[in-house]
Length: 87
Image (cartoon, rainbow, N blue to C red; front, side):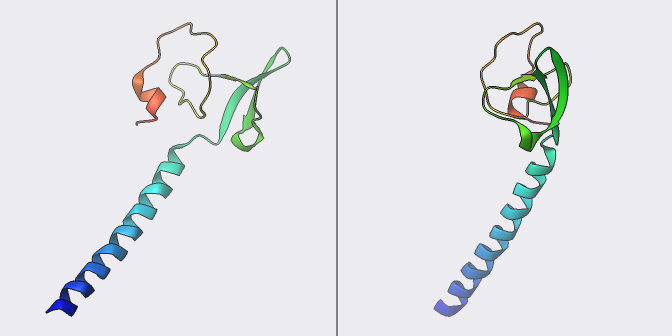
């Protein structure tokens, strides 16, 4: 009986690990692949991997905020869904 409970526990643990891994993959798919940044005087769209510390990211209405940072200027109100990346 004891072995049955241990086996069931191991099975449930492995099942939860798989589901957690799938959930992380789905969350990563929600993240935008590119962001708009200001380089010089131009607004340029760059891959997320090319962001460097100090870049100014432009977020327009309907965009998802792709990275953590400091808000420099707000010309419209931010929706909480944009901040926490909820669909």
